[in-house]
Image (cartoon, rainbow, N blue to C red; front, side, top):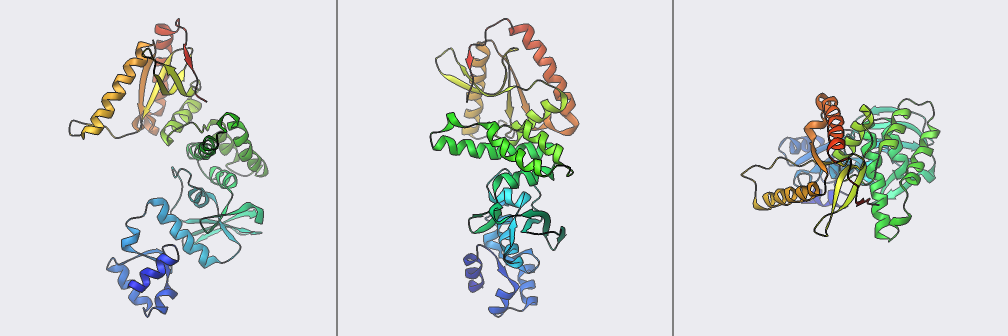
Length: 341
């Protein structure tokens, strides 16, 4: 068993039926190791050591399975769509990681079999990059592919995640002021233009329009989707307010004219049994909210439950009411704030 584990780690986490045979294990014996919980079956003919598998994240488990799939398929294939997005470190929200998504350079067939979805997208070698030893389509192409095959929420989260990565890279290099979201979106729009007429292209285009790389979570992107879907005016994102004590507070969403602030609370509800650090965080946020209110802003909080399909229309109606109420109460005040870049 130690030899199997060593081979798996050398290969990036997986071992094959042939590896087992080379180590003296018959296919039936590998099956018994799976039944005993010693091995985990990743896909047909590929396994992982259970102790290792238990420590992996959802992304790691998929990418190890993808590594095994690419080794099985041989040269010419690259991870695409949802699998490529996972390899590039983008948000996994809404992605299909139950199968490994691949495309082939000069490929022409499309089918799903034995846990591998082969897509018909015709690739050029220039479309493929190396990510940790895996052949993967370049990020803008992966985002466009996955967005075309997804609903508008998943697509908007994915595009936002990719733009956020670009913004973070620009910040590290001290070039955030030169970064343009619209230029980044242009890369995806050019890919979508080549998909003209393909089902899902219009939905993907809407997702690109909605996306914002300043969103800190899928939940925040979903708030933007809700506004778009129900005709609520689009808010400013990650807006910085100058507090009365000289400090600054960044709010998730702001409608400056109406002076309405919306904060998205994506964490689990804290109760009296929460630990001290959690209670301290909640108390600090309450004090921060009071300071924002002291500036003459109306503050509303949204949660995941507010964004659920059965509640979305009701939440949009609530936002419209809150916008009208905030306009009546605070609209006469000057904004007195500065936007975040």
